[in-house]
Image 1 (cartoon, rainbow, N blue to C red):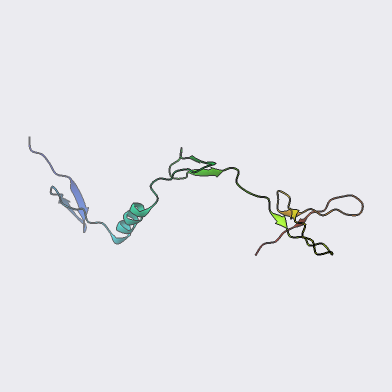
Image 2 (image 1 turned 30 degrees about the vertical axis):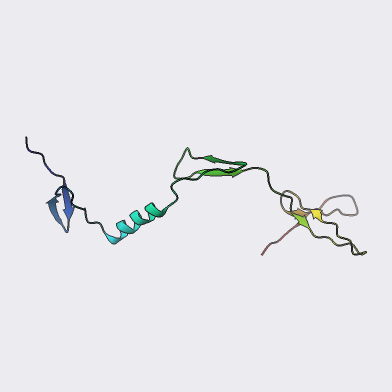
Length: 109
């Protein structure tokens, strides 16, 4: 039985692909292949970092610990420095005279 070589469609014609022949591709396809070759192929977690790669196209990278609280730089009238920790939603805690709290959102540029 004779071995048949694969057929390819190129330039609107069907051709037999000879052994060792390259299949011509468009510039867009080649650019996509080049990008895939240069993409990150694997990542390794460091300390306090976990990677959920159950969906390899969309890995989830999580980190714990190591952070410090964000503080508002507050200087007293006497020239002292007394930083005020912001809330977990990055707001400056502000207490009114009646004892209620009305936090001030911090805006970053």
